Image (cartoon, rainbow, N blue to C red; front, side, top):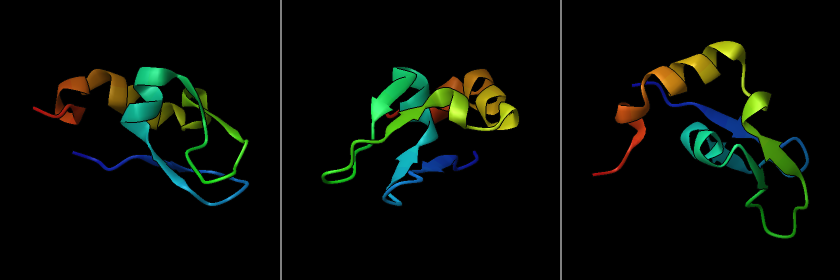
Length: 60
């Protein structure tokens, strides 16, 4: 399992890649930050890895 994250370019808050995959577009979870984070902001390799290994990124 790889830990894939995206750092908000505005405030530095870290968002999990699997959350971005499930929501595709989300407001940054940083307090008071209005930046929009997108799944497509991850590299092609990271996107492919998450979508091909979804079962590894779920909580039981």
